[in-house]
Length: 340
Image 1 (cartoon, one colour):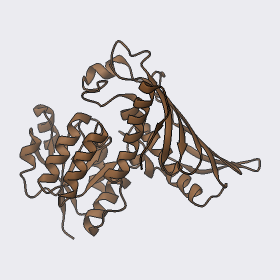
Image 2 (cartoon, one colour):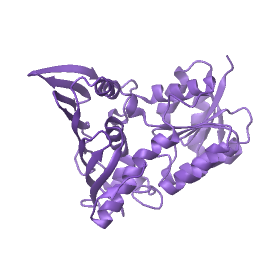
Image 3 (cartoon, one colour):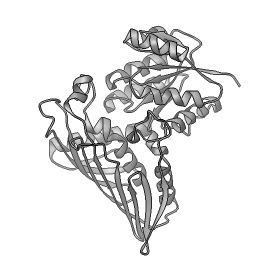
């Protein structure tokens, strides 16, 4: 089997999840890293025993590099994806794949003309609890789904935004709470509900109004394709990053995600179905534990030549569509219908 050579663009905290995943994949080698901080990049390149580039466009000229991992601020995703696809590379990008649906349309056109594939990292779909919950729903273990509710309360303070000035700005982050912290929750909700048909949402900036020009709090009422109702609430104004609380109410019981553990409650019994554990000492619990599986699935697709098994651009666009719809609904103060 031929070795696939990878490059990682962006050496912030999340890149380590990609690095550790690559190290565990057979016949995959890290050939290069890219970062605008030359001192940091050179030190990491020496540690990782790979090449360093200050400019990603120079790296893309290396014909030996097969796969490019994009771990940069949101506003850089689209231009880097377009450049990498044009260079004939396979591309794996951190969420969100773009800042809005207009950018998604540009990327879709570029991917249709490229030889490479584009995968997006929605690793929380691959958490054991997420997979077990999806299996319960597919098997209709508790009958028809009636409602799906999610409550996300995390902490993001002024220094978090001050240390990374691109955050908290529509021009560079595409939003804040919704497109960054809560997008995984929205993705899971629409995935479990088979898609969202319409929603009514509200966004606000409470404690962080002097720091960011985007939102720190959001809520929405949703209608799902499977007929269920949805309730969503998220805030960055908590004092810690609490685990996601998700509840799916069905005809014959409930599925509850609490403290990274999935429970089935039915007929007066509470049974543990699955639990998540963090595989890497550096990994934050709220990142989920699916990076290795997500990256492995993408590399398997590359080797097989099939565009299946990983989160595609169209799948990634679904949660981005929800983010835009919540913003629009909050502005209009009315229900917004989502197109298929």
